[in-house]
Figure 1 (tube, rainbow, N blue to C red):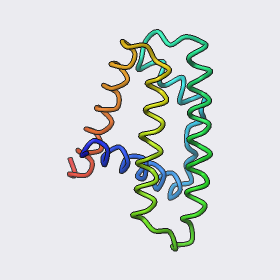
Figure 2: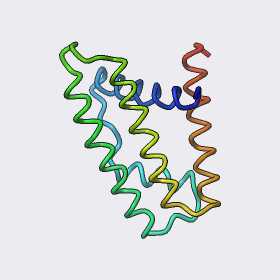
Figure 3: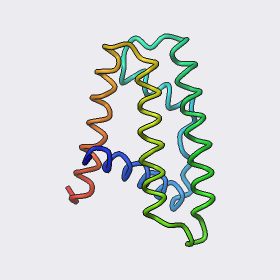
Figure 4: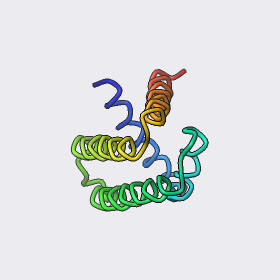
Length: 123
């Protein structure tokens, strides 16, 4: 449960920081390229499927952020939605990957959660 919350907070934090700084979120192509550096052996066929997953996530995040702009957005509801999106994305990514790649991807998820935990603690 803590990991799930941390991943959701990471997604919210990245989104909030990107909007505050005028920073654009990485493109699906950039996300696939980064994942290829973190998880070895991703094939071209897997990369194409992963790109589709990242594109769907980007559209969902854009819709959610548009709905929440103007200060009228319910942060609890947004946090819940981000958590669901993250869970769905991770499940879809794992379904595309082989067993060995899934283990490597889980390490990436765990490292992100740990990094967010440290940020939340101010370290």
